[in-house]
Image 1 (cartoon, helix red, strand yellow):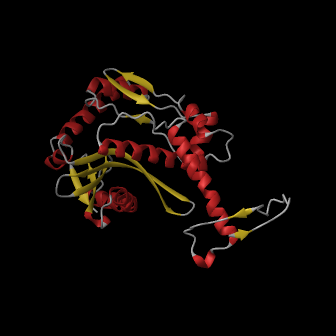
Image 2 (tube, rainbow, N blue to C red; image 1 turned 90 degrees about the vertical axis):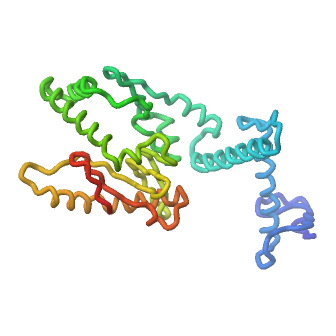
Image 3 (cartoon, helix red, strand yellow; image 1 turned 90 degrees about the horizontal axis):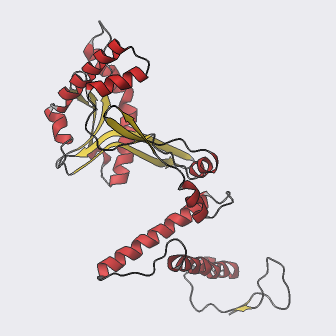
Length: 298
């Protein structure tokens, strides 16, 4: 029992009354009256979390689970949501909105469906106002487009898109034909076929990742392809660039590979951390040159 204060003293640094701590996990070497009192007050945060579970926008109740595994899974998801809510509250502590209000604001961000000939895609407009402030504070960057799983565009669609970029009709048609032929050749490449197969154990294309390699620094990147074929992990960077007329192809490929080596090494470190691959060197790195259907391992 510790008499930390008595009488009618209401000064903020003092704690009025008597506190009896039956048991505490505060280490003995730092178990001062102030430390134990603060740990006791931390219980208020736990109680607030349970109130959030039972009421508010998490709403763990009512539940209609029939198995223990389902119940545990439901509670786990709700607890994970609570942790995310607390993390967002930390990011948005200087913004005059609750987490629930902020999420409602972000709900106004909508994708726009664009159709070019027979191909459609979802474009995400850049947020403005309070939405931009919320995303920036949470260190979140929205993608520019969302994949829809459509088949590859045909030459007519490609030519239409190229004309919208300012090419003449004849130049767009010629370039569209070259692109279509190069794509078909890449899709027939046995190396790529195995990594792009629909039944591959694991794969992700255009995978946006970010991490914090050191305090105060955010690292972000988009991986062209990370795939596991059942035996090897491959991280590929696709390059459509090609040697200039008269330039030696081998020298060009060597130059491009060395240029993108640091980027691929950083991507491997990030991917290994996310996927739990140890050591990171288990992920093989490659630069794939689509013009000559050649992969150069880094």
